[in-house]
Length: 286
Length: 216
Image (cartoon, rainbow over all chains, first blue to last red; front, side):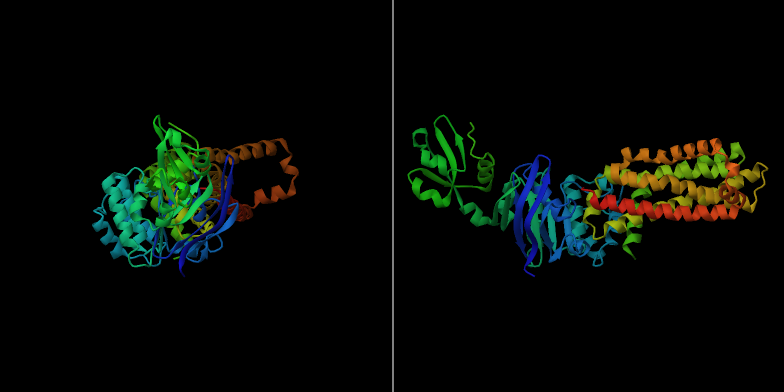
């Protein structure tokens, strides 16, 4: 099996929000960043993948298993890390292992102990005594202990200091090194993805904007800059977003449209630029 | 180990840090038994009190957002529900056994004599009351959460009062069936046990349906 996660035409309707026809695949051995501004549908997508929300339509396969019809099989090799911990605050770390390990046939106690040691987590401590970063590492330690093939992380870096974020990205890079594990990683801190992700799926206002290779994503867009007099109607039609200044403007355009505007100052776009410009939906702002 | 049992064990680990608090609630009914000099009264209070603590698993789950943990575990939702019922029934039975030992000791010290029939009738009444409280309460917790769901505990109390009112207003003596049941305690107990099993089956099915349709 080459694709560890397959999401096809996934839709979900809420009052006032609709996630519409989200399709992407995550191959074995890679990290995919799931990006988009707040409220774009990242967590909804993840909850639909985990069958924590009922989908309106579509299909999700985790490691080849349908996430509803074969939920147990699908979740057996799935590890999940949320933005905050999901263990009882009163549990000691040893109790976390006792409570969770029973559900996983291939739980490896030695591996759990080693991972805790590596992450500097003392088994005698209570969950509530751990910092946010440590709690996140505890969730990771659990997932590593049953050798979860697919790891899904929902905004794991939000609230983490730069050192902990860097550490997490290092851990994830190590995790996929053997080519047998994959990571889906939702975040709005796009700097993390520039470093760690191989693939990007970008959801904007419930719609799939892009899904594919990270380099392809970044290469598909350019920032053009110019003076106020250079802002033509043609450019207005092609640009995906604009930022106006008193002296000029900068706009995001598709690389394929670049030839027409070669006279302007062109710069590569970062993931942040692409998300910020496209999220404004072409609205002008100072 | 089956997933149902694993789920029950997980629920036990949730309330483990609160065991002392739960045990404390078992002390007060001993006092009631002593004041009323009645095993039946003590057991009835004990089972009512322990039924009130069944919301702990739901409260702890909510407090720690643990529905996300339950959401990622490789276990069917029906197994989670049955596991929780089993854990709660075990809690009830433990409280019953404790009360059936502690209350008679106190009553004997106070000079009361307790027959085997007292034991059996108190046990069956205790089980019946506990079941009556929890079969309404648990689906309420699953549907509305630990705070709003608590109101479901009062349904059997209201139902009990209405039944009492109806019995006093109606000519009980004319009902041959009711007369037979009341005068044959063994039949009454047997019916109570059958009724308890039937109530739990329906309650479990309702809770499973609620959880399957619930979005986390």
